[in-house]
Image (cartoon, rainbow, N blue to C red; front, side):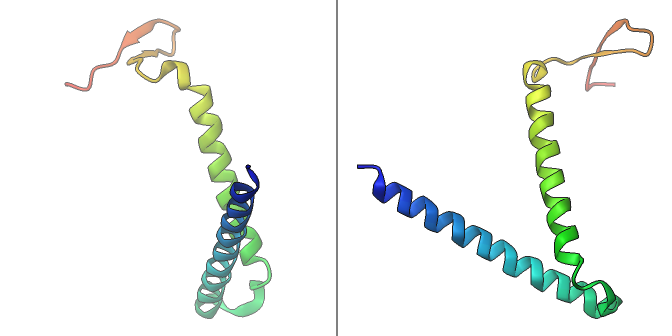
Length: 88
């Protein structure tokens, strides 16, 4: 019963990774044409590391502050709770 969904999700995963790989290589070529081809082999790796790091940092930040989402109070440097107001 779930086999068709598995095939579709597998196809979408492969298509997404292929599209990312192609765009990553095109961006690396674009940067290399402007700055020289000396680091062309490292650019796709660097772009991938930046994207994965940024994405993981975002997700971990969301999980860390999930319980404080609507909280508008902040801690001062002295540990006292201050109320945050968007109106000056």
